[in-house]
Image (cartoon, rainbow, N blue to C red; front, side, top):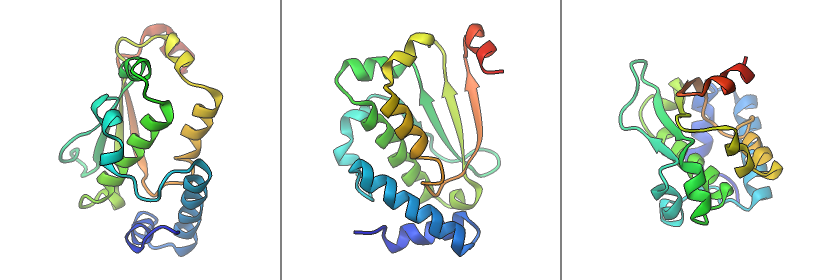
Length: 166
């Protein structure tokens, strides 16, 4: 199997019709999804528990610049993992929501804004992630998905964590 024509056209739109760039992203996407056993097209019906966890939200509409807005509710990770949801499933859900966002007008060209809600989150969140989870999380975005995250906003970050981010 390979990514479908709609996906390939989206790659071209995101990369402003640069065939080499679009081809690189499509190949990396296919390699990542095959390596991790993820389908090329994700389905909400197979990710119901993950979607109900509220770890990620795709907001309706767009921001003032026409970009999609995805929210990452970091405090919900602990509850989701304790309920038996794998981090890989939560990552897959985030990818599904970005796939949905890419079908909206102007999002392929304008990208998305990520809002990370870090309220009520401490350093203990790090124990929720294995090294494989972290690698997969980086790998799924690094030149392997045709959506540009234009800005990242972090809200509610505890001051000791702010100091480590500088």
